[in-house]
Image (cartoon, rainbow, N blue to C red; front, side, top):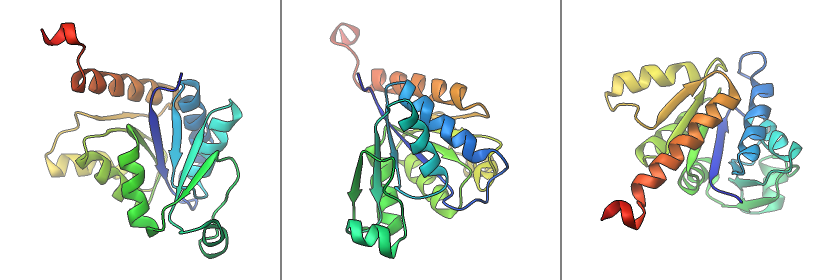
Amino acid sequence: MIQYKIAVSGSAINNCTKGAFKKAYEVGRQIALHSCVLITGATIGVPEWATRGAKSVGGISIGLSPAVSKQSHVHSYRLPTRYMDLIIYTGFDYSGRNMLMTRSADAIIVVCGRIGTLNEFTSAFEDKRVVGVLTGTGGVEPEIDRILKLAKRGRRRVVFDADPKKLIDKVVKLIKLNDKQKHPRKEEVL
C-alpha cells in the first residue's frame, strides 16, 4: 500500500561531495522500501540517481518536468525520460515546476543542491511540509541549518541525518505524526 509522496530535490550537476549521488540512489531506494511514491523534477543528477534507486526495488517514480511537452523536455531542456513511471509536462519552467513539486509532496528530501534546491526547500518550509536534509552531501545543503537559525523560524518539521535510511525513517515518522495531527481519529477528538 502506497502511503505518502516524497520529493527529492538536489543538484542536476555534480557540485556535490564525493559519494552524494550514491547516497541519492539510496534515498530513492529507501523511499520505495517505505511504500512511498518518489517525486522528482525529472532531471539529471541527484533526482535521476534517486529515481534509479526507487526503480531498483520496484518503486513508483513520478517526474514533474519544467517543459511543456516530451519533445521540449528531451530536446530543449535536454532532460532524461528513463526510470520514471510518469512524467508530467508542466510547462511552468523551473520555478513553477518547483512549486508544483513541493506542493504535491508530503515531504521533500534535500541532497546537495544549488539555488533551485534552496527554492524548493523554502517553498516546502513555508507550506509546512516535512523536510529531510541529507547532510554531508555538499552544495547548499550545509547552509540550510544556518539559514534556519538566521531566519528564526524554528525547525519543527525539518530533520537532518547523514544516513539515507535513518533520514527516510525520520521523515516518514514525521509525516505520519503531522498527518495524525491534521486528521485525528474521531475517538481522539471526543
